[in-house]
View 1 (cartoon, helix red, strand yellow):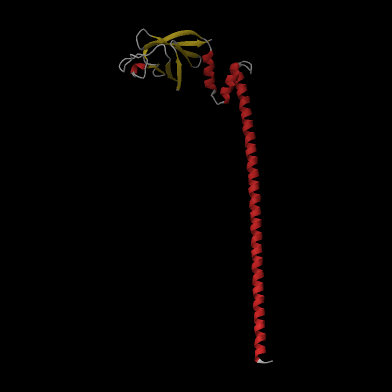
View 2 (tube, one colour; view 1 turned 135 degrees about the vertical axis):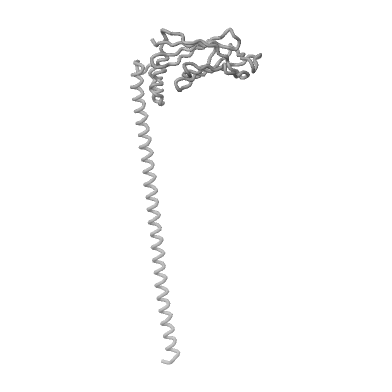
Amino acid sequence: MDFFETREKYRRREVHIYMRWLSRIFFLGLALWLGWQWGSLEQRQLQVDADLALYEREQQIEELSGKVQGFEHDLRQLQATREANALTDQASDSKLTRLVRGQIARGTRIEQIYQMLQGLGKPVNCRSLSNHSVAVATELYRGVESNISLFDGGLRLHIEGQPQAQGSKNEPWFDPKREIAARFIYLGSQKVEKGILPLRTILPAEDWVLVVDIQQSDLRGYVVVEVQNCAIR
């Protein structure tokens, strides 16, 4: 075997070794790529399963929340029915009982409802407490005489009306044939009564009521306010 044949033999052997290493590297890379793809597919599938489970759990929570709200609503209605029957002492299908039940279900305090029920009674044994002339405020006239304070500030009253054509900023002059608004502030609450003169308002207390009568005065621009203390029949 001469020199050239020996060199060719070693060259082919080197090429064979290189090809074998390249094949190994290729198949190793292919295996790593396939493994990565498989892992990514598994991870995506796990993420999809987790999202699906989370969505189903949210749907279950929403369904349970709706049922809980329904149960709470039914419970409030049942409690409102019982309390309304106890307050009105009438049939559960009566108009007054339904009205009270609706107020309780909306969250109105029992004390406020009790005061409203007291105000529905007919005042008896009334005793006059005070009598005042009050100027009616208008868009043109705003004066201190449109406000009165009674019982050391326990009851405050402000009256507004519509101005007459001849009214001015210096003198009260309202139209007695049009609606007036009387704003009462008492016991930490506020009440606005609107209507045509004469106007009566009942302010409930514990076991008695204040009856406020507002009538037209002979003095132009003023009304007469009479406050009475009455019992409830």
